[in-house]
Length: 110
Image 1: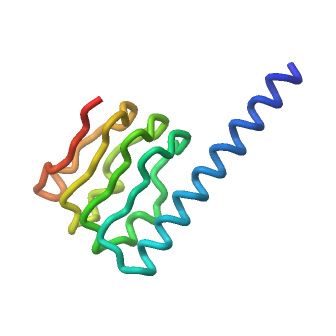
Image 2: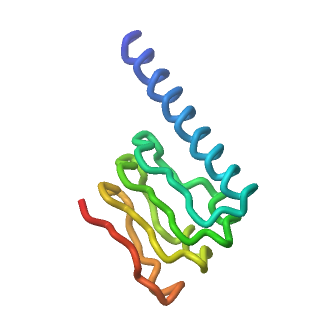
């Protein structure tokens, strides 16, 4: 039981570190008024940070290889400038952006 507790704490620390890294990248993009954001490979990222909604000029978002990322795509619907959304190996995400944005320019191949 102790080893299970330690393993859970390590996983939680890794998830926190990955989420913090995602927030750091989002903040950099916001401060630079960036049009691209690369969150690719943040394998332990399990939720979309709400701060993404602040990137109104974002045109390209790469979430590829974020295998633990789950939930709905709806939080991205407000990114009206978004043209490219890479979701390769994001098998736990669901939903559609087409109804909110009128666009469906994304890749979701597994």
